[in-house]
Image 1 (tube, rainbow, N blue to C red):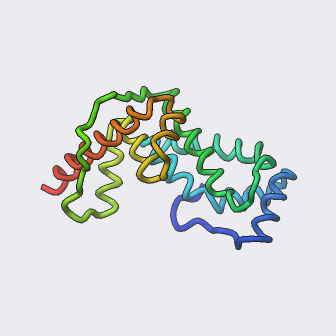
Image 2: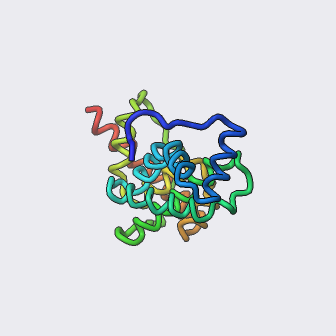
Image 3: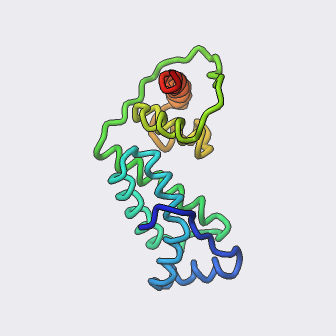
Length: 184
């Protein structure tokens, strides 16, 4: 599994369609090409959610096995990347539910937005995100990084929409605290 460098994306259109067709026919070369195109980005997603390299690798492997089993159900080749990402997110969540306890604290925020007052380096933010408690981290990543709506997060995680909003609010507060500590 390659982790360094950038993912190789196939040219849109014919080449990607051929790759998908090859995967549907269980052609190993097409499956390897699909994996090579998406593994780096999907590993990053899995790692952000699980916070653990071993769990992220397990989620990635589980995800691509599911992708290859279910690729014939893909409705649009244009949606391939987002379809794979949804599978990776769900696999990552299954793994952390199995091996870790995700605690969601239903706290009510005061509705005030959390504002970042200083510019951040991506490295500092990534490190701070990994230090968040599981429940905060998962909701933060799904909403702020992956772009899910609170209703979708609530359905994925089996929590209320209010809990999702609360977790996000408190995740931002906690991140703010962690980042202040890092800077001083």
